[in-house]
Image (cartoon, rainbow over all chains, first blue to last red; front, side, top):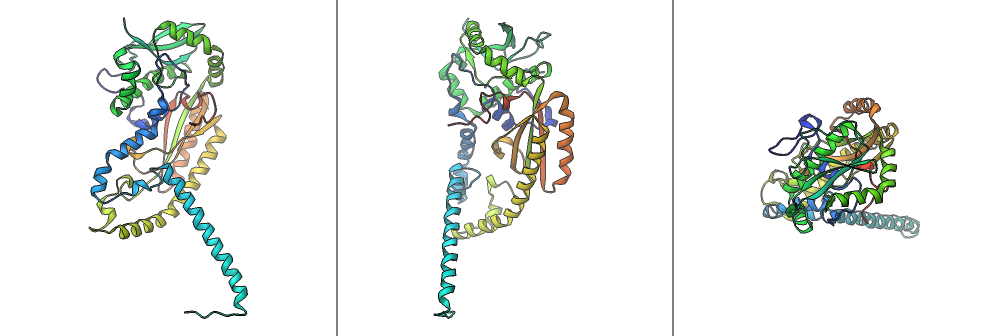
Length: 116
Length: 261
């Protein structure tokens, strides 16, 4: 089953299991039993691996004048939270403007505003 | 002898010996260590690579990590063909056989209960990808940033336009993924949603919008696979990928949806 030379391919090319499929299972799932050798696998969670892969290409990206990874939701969970927070703030602001506008329409009967 | 013991899985006694050629993470053959009527599948690993310090260093090396993960999975996969293994997280290492025995003793009840729960079940992985015509976003290319020397402002504007065009596509993808997950969850005994995969790591084309695992009795697997196959045509612009059968990795943990604090 296993090849003596390189990586065993338990799923063969047809089945479509990629490295990420394997890593997310063997690193992240499976039963956790503390062995005699204490290693905190949380230190190398997939996220870290992903980040390292991204970081590896940072310089290249910067050369191209691109720095969106700092704010791309797909690459940063922090950015995703930030984005949600931003969206919330925008919606709140919009709501406030609409409410204001509505009140404004009320007043408009007495003081009609002219378009600029 | 300075070898440590790397444990892959615990299972019930097999009717037959392990494949003679079954090789573990450090190239040593996988062996069975039976204790209290349970079998730990172990192999010897060198201390110079698997004691704490070297192991920590190795785990930071993606090539080493990948090779070890594949070897670990190779053993689990071979076991899955002949039994229902309870897969241990990668890099569970003991000093010697007696360390493995005491682990079995101290966890016996829990191990038996989990084996009972998973008996005869396998895990299927289902992923949905949004096929993008654009180059991988993770590698926003010069083509995407447009004709040369785009200012920061131009760049942002262009990105915003792209974002809006994508929103509609995303909406459709999300609706499809949600429905598919509902349908498959209803068929499966249990399910787990995993984080979408990073394209660089998976090497897969398109954007991963659903990454889920389903626990299915082996006997119902064929039906499950057909169910997934049938959805493949309802989704223009989307790609459905099935992997498995895996050992029930995603369902072996102590708690459902075990979260990292």
